Image 1: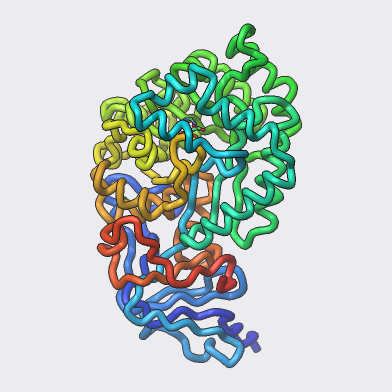
Image 2: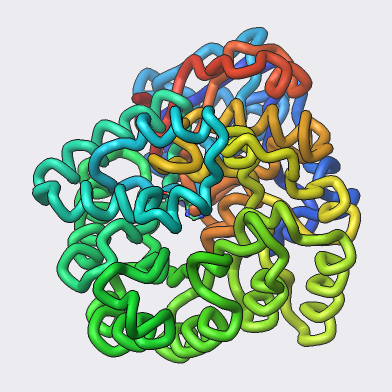
Length: 428
Ligand code: NIG
Ligand code: FE
């Protein structure tokens, strides 16, 4: 006799729309026409076994035998149900804030001017070095709780405000500890190559990345999933960025890059050629270069990277140039959207606002923007097979929203539409 099927531990039923994000090749992020052609279900349900999704479908396909007294049932009548948000680019762990610099920016100083004068990232480095590990952990935990209230169930967390061995390692440790104490998931990235610290000013960027490779990175194997670098004027030149990423790749790290944020230095194409998982910012990446990245990846027999778009950053830095997301998608380059939460260029954790701005300033359709903060963002972390989609076997990270349709999601500008957050099968 076969065992009777296990009853569901959690059932979310009667949803006006279930945005599954399923469809096309599940192993790949969505681009081109597929970016908006994923599967929606009218009047649907999502059922879970523990921390996993067991079944998703229209209500008439629900097996009532699996709904017992042991099943927790949530009613989503009139509401949208979708995957938990994936925040694939944040600088979660830092000390202090930069409100005084915000005032200087409002008076006309630029981001790079302030950095060149020893402020900007370097002022957060001073505050972060001065903070204790307990203070950094408490701040990171409070920020994760805030992300959770926005329906974010996975957060990438970069180091990069230590720029010395002990502090950089502390930042990775704090990100991991904060993740263990949170119901969602934290993915640590090593961004020791954020800018050249004062101690290496005379020696220069190559000497600094050599120090990271020799003295810091080896101890972070298994601790940080990705290595990232800020390729930009005033940060790291293209040649040093390439050298550093090549070496990190040889050490077994996944690759990311901050590139084409303020100038077109060719960082995105360089990192894509090395097999980077994501290329981030891309405000100055041209549609032609995006097309070359897609073609080169196809010729090499691999998937192109996910372009992580960060529309709150040009808004906050008072810049008019936003990444041409529409053209990227049309060229076949998959896009994700994230806040870039950090104290300098985006002191906001509101990924819903970033999603709306991606529609308003980068030309994404609502369905593309929803894919960009779920399934494609999961692929930007190499986790597209586990999170970001509502389908059997995926992690039970699920949102119930206070809106009745997909088109309302980017419409309620700056509002938080989250009614209920489920993380790993637990109703938070
Ligand atoms: O992604 N561009 C470089 N790094 C961050 C900003 C960090 C800061 O200003 O503190 C970013 O925008
Ligand atoms: Fe960033």
